[in-house]
Image 1 (spheres, one colour):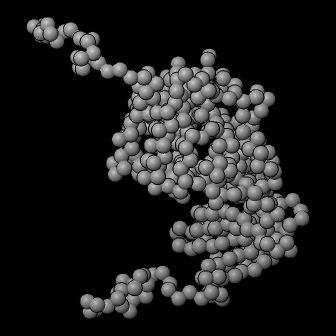
Image 2 (cartoon, chains in turn purple, green):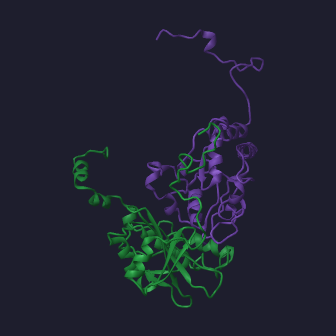
Image 3 (tube, rainbow over the protein chains, first blue to last red):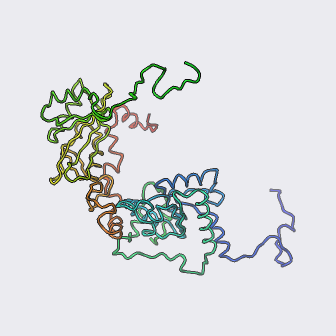
Length: 208
Length: 231
């Protein structure tokens, strides 16, 4: 092609005094750095918190600064489930199934008072905290939280991700619910190809 | 009109009576002309007529609700062609019967009429459906059944609409229903997670292919030729 680099550029020096061309680091650090800065959120917005979440994603607060440019509306390409708003009992099996369809590694942010505790809706229709259904990493208080609050929660989650260790096998442990309990959803159902999710059937992680 | 005169809402110019009445009496204003026509047509089925804040309320015998509503819709001098709401009211006093309320609107005559029927408690709550008169009653009656447990006779598909199909705690908007429900939180969660989220849809609701047969003939023809733009 006529583009030939000079000979001194085609060789890499491994001598310790030569500082250019390579860097040494822990694998954990590298992997966690990449994961923490490319979290793709699965927005599960049910109420006013979702409006604040939209404001967070819009240009004023610009969630893209933290590597969350892409909202993943399919759980199969998502890393972090952001539950923004109250969850009625009718939605309980749906958020449970979405959580199980998300591949590991996955995290969850419970945004706002209602998602975290049921909030003011201490009544017959609303789940009293989504941590009764799915595990939660970060709780963001507020009714609704301001975008700065959500960003702070996201930075906390990034800190958590950066401090994970690959050698710690317990980190990614997913408790398999007892098949006789109602929390158990068989793998075939989790992998079931729903029409809105298109061709993502090969990205399931339930082992089938 | 000076520059600094305040123009009140509803008045286009000083001295002109606004189209929307400003001073409405709480009680005993003139009722809607439909109330008098109803009393003449169905003398005994019309229990009483009230006017509250300028709006006419007609109490109808529950047994003749369907007949009255059909007449109000079809009679050329009434033409209440729009059912804007259908709901129920339960009062705290156990003696007061449950009321089913229909909000009717006559678009040609610009009239509004509120029809109420009182169903005594203690017996099964039943009343005639107006689904065959107003299609809008479909989901409204389902919601009313879901929240109050009133059975609408003649409704083609009377099942829960807000709560899930397998919900067994009762009817949440009844006064004897505790705010937090009847079961413990763990039992509620267990039952909620046991539901199948897709079970409450019928196959007709899930597939849009069946809707093709109901399209207008010309649209079916164009879509049949492979046109995909819709309009």
